[in-house]
Amino acid sequence: MAHRSRLSTILIDVPKEETGSAAAFWSAALGVTPTSPPGEPQFLSLPGVLPGLTLAIQSIDGTARYHLDFETDDVEAETARLIALGAEQIDQWLDCHILRIPGGQLACVIPRHSDDATFDRLATRWT
Amino acid sequence: MAHRSRLSTILIDVPKEETGSAAAFWSAALGVTPTSPPGEPQFLSLPGVLPGLTLAIQSIDGTARYHLDFETDDVEAETARLIALGAEQIDQWLDCHILRIPGGQLACVIPRHSDDATFDRLATRWT
Image (tube, rainbow over all chains, first blue to last red):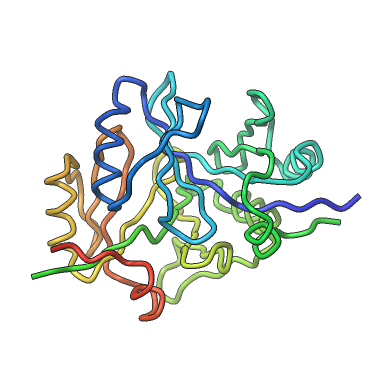
């Protein structure tokens, strides 16, 4: 069955102890107010920076990095598609499949979170 | 004098020897055709993925990472603004100022490259 996906998210992954200084920097650098989604205190969303893009700071155990997310209406099918293109699944966290992609970066496949209009306009259908 | 800037660009920085496999992956993963800007063979642009966003693969000497760029109509003023917010300039390449930002990632300040309509709509004016 066909599924859809799109590049939806930039995560700014920051060591826990530096979350405060990173949040202060990004808030002022972009002129936006970070907000933490309900029940997800490890995330600080930076809303409205680019149309259709989710930008957020994530507190992690580890060193600073960025990573990108593909949102999709079928996490299993999208993960299989990217693995067939050369990615390797290295971990899973809840519904988030964590991949090492060709070139060496991290990218995650996550359940669709954007609204209908955004997803319909920007997602690609894979058959 | 006031200047303007915006988060404009995601760079997928890839070790030189892996550029081919990274380009093949991203091209198929996003369903777009990479193109190299004239005179800049180290870049492969992935056009039309998100409105207002430049997404490109860059061949580098080093390990895989992503980085983000702020485009601006005044590179010196924007660099000074981000340094005042806690960033540290660690290098310069042509007109690109390379910063280590709070949290630990890389971000660059680059001359404005988007068209008037995009820049006018999405950039923030700093006074």
